[in-house]
Image (cartoon, rainbow, N blue to C red):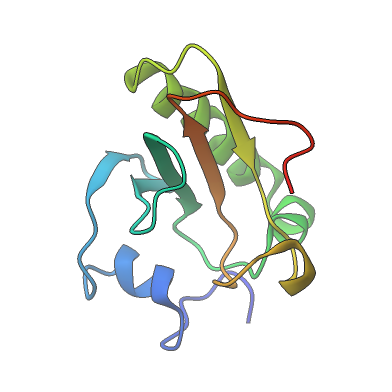
Length: 117
């Protein structure tokens, strides 16, 4: 169920401390950690601590936490000194989502091309 931790979710396990991650920021509602397969010098994931399968369901159910994720993504970019950066939410397998827990990718530290995919 959305909002409740899931035992089969990698990111829920990271939030619970069951799986290690290199945490760069943490708030009451969010956790930010380095991606294990970085696509840029700065590649940090920002997740809500509550489980929602994607950004759309998070925004619909808990808009304040969705805003917290976005605010923390900006804070990560500032702390990482990324003058230019991209915040990406992949939603669905066709968009490249592989972990079905809402998350933002903060990418920076190099030139980013457009279109992205």
